[in-house]
Length: 267
Image 1 (cartoon, one colour):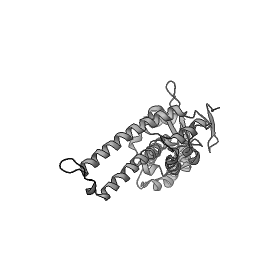
Image 2 (tube, rainbow, N blue to C red):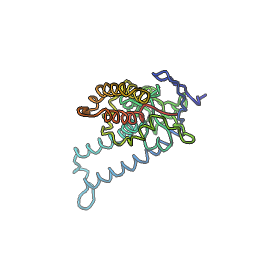
Image 3 (cartoon, helix red, strand yellow):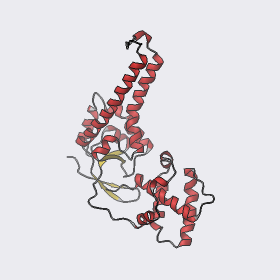
């Protein structure tokens, strides 16, 4: 009997309930992704044909440039494997198919997928695809109580449904403060890859800062802002020299918005 929900306790001792994505939604998401990859693969093959063909658009098997052909084969492999790896890591555990079906990959502790777990689960696709058309993976998803394929088991990940929020969510006090300051997440001049270097410890610092921001007296808030900037800015390659306390606050609040997308999953 498959569980309709799984209860996960995060490292912060918060209990979260998730609805695992079943075989139907995962298969549909995979079909969408495979259609996209098939189109890309066809375009690559067509490009290869025109590069290797002669003036009469005929291929001469003996004139093939083995280096060029090898390059195209490696490119196809990298694109087909890297598509899942790159999107799931940089796009919050979603590929195009997963996004359309409203599902995502997360860690078993409720956090976003890490670089290592994303690499492992997608590397294991080679086995999950055996003997053909993800047969082993589909059998595992169908039989496993949390609908996991082998890649999920090894990497410690789980694919879950995103809960649809009914009605308008009440705006938090810190969100109102950020809005009143006219801050937008796009204003944070930090690369996505650089943000990925920040882990649970840094997120907890930024979240605590945001939660206490409006309750702290100005002097304590200034002290905390400078202390937190001293810790985080060097890791982000940012210079705090010459910045006012208000500029430090704005940058840290923007950092909170950016990290919240990865770490504060609402269900």
